[in-house]
Amino acid sequence: MSIYKSYFKRNDTLIFNSYTNTGRNPVVELFFGRVDNLNSPKGYSRFIFDIDLEDLQSKLSDGSIATGCTPSMTHTLRMTNTSSFDEELLNATWSNGRRRATSFDLVLFRIPKVSGTTGDPQTWDEGVGQDYYNVNDVFEGNKGFSDRPASWYQRNTIKNWSVGGIYDNENGNTISGLNYSGLTIVDTQHFEFGNEDIEFDMTNEINVANPFMIVFQTAKL
Image (tube, rainbow, N blue to C red; front, side, top):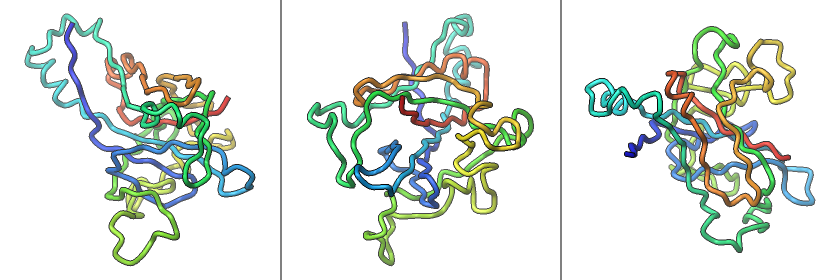
C-alpha cells in the first residue's frame, strides 16, 4: 500500500455575522455557543477549504498511479487537533471565556450551488487575513487583520454568498438547496472529548469528481 498526500489550495474560517477574513491562517478555530454566564457574544464559525488535486490527477493520467487501483483508492481528510497534546486542556476555558466543547458532531458538507441543487458553484476567494478580529487589538496599520473576502457575508469583493454563512441552518430559506436539510453531507465525525484529531472519509466525494469546495460545521448533541 502506498500513500499520496494532497494539501489545501485555499481555506478560510467564516465567523458568524462578521466581515472578518482569516484566510491563510495556519490554525482553524471552530466554535459554537456563547461565553459562560453571558448572553453574548454568541455565535459559531465554519471552515471552508478547497483541496489541490491537480498533481494527483496528473499522476493518474500519466500512469504514475495505476488506474486499476482507482476503484479501491481511499481518501481521508486529516487535521491535527491543537488541543490533543495536553489533556489538561479538556474542559478548560479559552482566554476569551469560551469553554472547550465536548460531545459534539462535526459535519463535513459540500457548498451548495447558487440556485440550490442546480446552477453554478459558489466560487470564493481565500483572502489575505490571518488573525481573528478583536476590537481591542485593532489599530491603524495592523496587518494581522483583514476584512477582504471571503467572510460570513461575501465570497469575493463584488459577490455575496446566496445565504449568509453559505447556508441557512434554521431551514427558513425559500431557495431550494440552501437549507441545512438540503445539503450534501460528505461525512460526520463524533467528538467525545473534543481533543480528537479530524479524520473524514472523502473517498466517494473525490473519486466521483464532485466539487471540492467543502465546509466544516459544528453541531452540539
